[in-house]
Image (cartoon, rainbow, N blue to C red; front, side, top):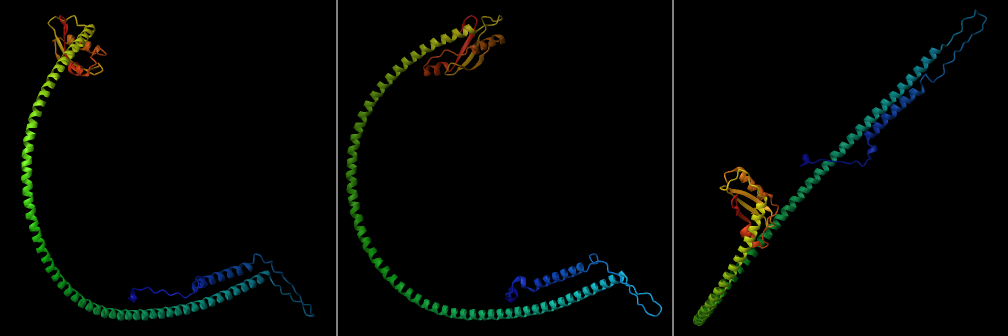
Length: 343
């Protein structure tokens, strides 16, 4: 368990006060001081050193006076700067060594604290496991006792249930026997009553049947007479209607033949023996729906002249009655013959 757990220890120190942050800040400070010292001691901004000449007047023979050259002064300044930089670098190294030692001490302390925390957590985990084990054992003992008590109660309840079920079964059996006897008596009574009712209904049905047969015969005879009268009336009406439709159709057929005769121009090669039969289909508005040559005359020019005459009529004269139109003028055949003209 401890190998799979991840230990996290907090020291309570803000992140900006941690050793790593302090180390980075110190390095930046040392670098800034070094750069600043170099810029402060740069020879570009210093005035050139003054040269001093001295001469000692004595009774002896005069000697040349020592002269301090400007280059020697600059070298000494550079040496001082280099020495200052070495001291600063040494101080930085010592500070770094001290910081590393402090960091190492803090790391070791953190490791000890983390180890102690891990050991404490392990001890607590072991204690918790032990406590869980004790609680689990207590729970198991309690569960065994409860199960035993439940088994005893269940056995007693089962015994009581069986005794109650036996008593109820005996009571139910007794009631069922009594109910069966009552139902048997009721069934016999109902059967006798049903037999008597059936006999009464049979006699009543036979009487009604005889009456219905007599009424049906009378109704049939009356309906037959009425139907015969209706058929005669309808036949007379149909005959009159047919005569009217035929008369109407003959009138409009004559009009159509007259119109087509006016539009037909047979060719010069036509003879009296030539006859062309055309099948014409009209719309209820009198407009031509289609024309088909169903009997040729043997002469193409003659056939085409008949077709042209049929197609030249914009609207055919037709009766207003739809039945007459559908019967005689929806589709009809007409013949073109030079001797008989059109029929």
